[in-house]
Image: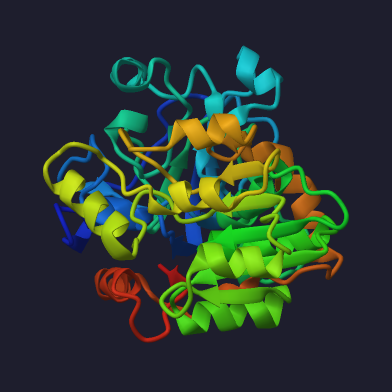
Length: 388
């Protein structure tokens, strides 16, 4: 089959790879009908994620049709239309039973590798390095889905792929980011990063009753989207000091809830941003946590900081202000199965049409070019959907 494969920094290729087969009786094989490039895929594209190997199949935002099931799969049948969430969860360990699906104890076969780096291993992920399981991803014609009774959600209505595809990651991720922020009526919520996760965090904050949502980015089309579709006020950080602007917009108190939807590859400004790049180059830190530091500075005392943005390792974070301002911090990969059913309901009831984020629809063979376009933020690229 054809698949997008990783071959090092900024080197993604269309390759012929073996079609996946049933390995465990709980597996299913899905023929992919739509798959997307995620912002976190760019961490792989830029060779920032440890544990990648040449030829790894990329992608963790797929959907399609079930074409084969293992003998022990009970919830899916051949012909079912499904969205496959990016996390792989067994459904039976202590963490899964506590609805902490992204912390599954059993789905990462390379758990010892992750444990050495993190202390414990999170769940395995599709197409996201051998540190997190070495699973082939969904930017391909077919995908093997382990624990098939636990992960995929069946789409039994006629809603088009483009509206439900983002249940695979970015819609639930933005929604959980807003949930983690503990939003209350009359709150002001500031969202750093207006990529797809940030867009859904903005929309979700509005759904949860925020009084004011402020979106922060430097890309005009992303800011326009947050204002038009998410009814957010916007700050272009290249044209204004974010701290000063937020203080002005909140009467000097700061936003009640802050969401970092940027993560490890933040583009900082001034000396602080330069310092991040120097430390990164000197191997003194693995991440560029400019946004994290700025959010800590801007958040009101006693406020909440939610971090859906991906971080990979060591980072210089001002823990003193975090502690002295009594901030609550909530983080984590998304507990996907907790949100799939209710968010599918919001789509089918017309409360939200997630397809608004799509800027490019192409074939799989255009994937390498679109990785570069997305990474370089060219051609007004916000979200790429590929049809194998």
